[in-house]
Length: 130
Image (cartoon, rainbow, N blue to C red; front, side):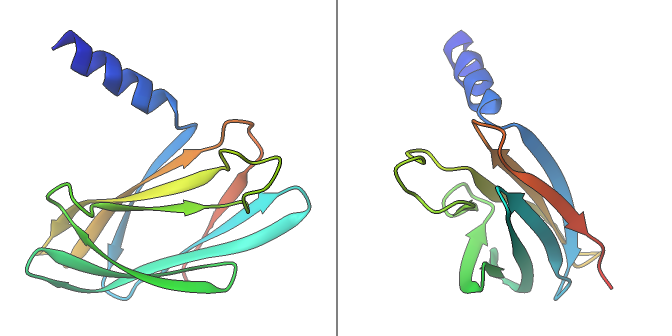
């Protein structure tokens, strides 16, 4: 039991920032990511929840992807590297987006965002939906 708590504490310390977000179907979350002199836009939304799977759409730096996330632990999250790997980035900053729960009555999905940024290089701004 102590080992489990200790490993959880280590896991939690790897993230410099966490945020919880609720999104309705087709509602898009936009986050402006800044580092060095670069600005990139991270967008994500969900379009379908069926048989326990949530169909996600996301884009970052004009690269589009789709994920299906589940609440059961497998495929519950996706990791997005915010900086291109290179000589200076053996472990680049990233955001982990975790599907936490689904509220069928509100037709809303809840996500947790975890920012891993060992060198504190990333600044991000959550943009308002219009």
